[in-house]
View 1 (cartoon, rainbow, N blue to C red):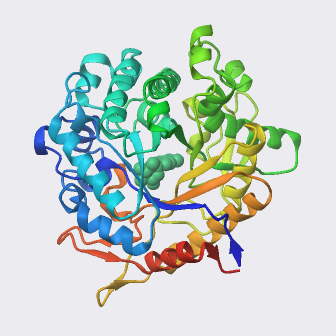
View 2 (tube, rainbow, N blue to C red):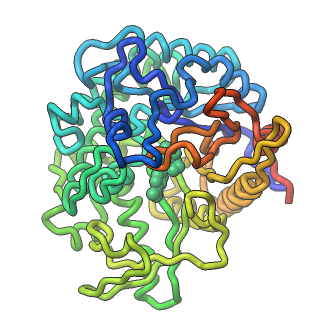
View 3 (cartoon, protein in one colour):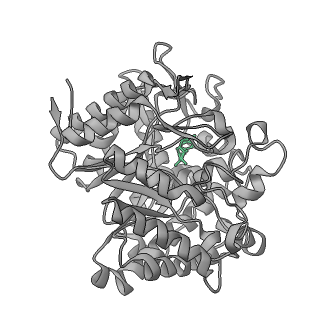
Length: 462
Ligand code: PNW
């Protein structure tokens, strides 16, 4: 038996646009994912989140399912455009009322709310009027929006995550152009990342100066990172793997823990990497009470000599990836999920120890980990042995990292239920609860009862 620490937090996660639907209800403004998903060619089959899981209307049923699974915590995001339809100005009472009902229902069921303030759904007015995350003004609008949320919900909500996966916004949204707002640039990702870090720090300053003492909660940022294993023992490949993790995670975490970008990025990106002023360094350094980590993927990393392009993996060649000169490959024996992401449980354990080591053993919450697998509905139930084996493997690796000294305090499965998987649409099923998107019927998969058992025992077999 692998037993977890007594107060280990067991949860599951979702995000607003992926589950809520009700895209035009009760005064909600449009956001960049509404517009992106309605633009022909941007998502698989033209899928969009107009209705999604209809969680906006069915949240009581969803919370009843969470309670049945024994979840102690639930991470969800607030849609900024429900609170401020144009991203600035007076709050929309109906938007606030929805999240009040949701929070109260969670608490009534003994489930601790973990709120992400921004999970990619930027109000489109901010994109049109202010260039969104390309503009420093957006950092102040974000802090003002955060203040409304702390003020309205902070009496009951004690766990805040400012931003979800800034890496995804910057690289998929502004370099590869496959996520909203769909731009392709070699310099914009660095500018966008810079503003995201400042937006985070400004929101944290608001919380700490105006709310934290009275409300007594904690606040941090969630970043995603893959693990990079050196392809060979050569010094060049070891350096390449290290460089790759620094370009992925230290890009966002070094400013928060040390006050500046990693040296390897300053050297390689040069003038495309913005510079923090002395004042900004003070603002950002120490701006997280915990380390939020989302993890999905592991690849082998090898060094690429300058000037050489490789074609074995698209990420190695392009733009911000070219700045790294790292080639990525997968072991052909690794099992792949429906996202074509390899299943490599030990990658998570190694990453947790890397974080502990670099950032002086911070409290870590794994705010997402999970997989998309096909669902076969048979006589009203869904067996998903591959998800169970995935979760079992990754949780085992988390346990190993805790044993080796990492301060991991909680784990949130991505995701509670099948949902709108961004550019991939609805057929990528990450949920522990199956959704029939025709009838909106919810069917807990076998992984849901497996997870309920893990939560109850606070232990894994083996
Ligand atoms: C995360 N990548 O997205 C998000 O936080 C979730 O909203 C999403 O549903 C989940 O992971 C599964 O995709 C990611 O390309 C999207 O490395 C893409 C990547 C990583 C995370």
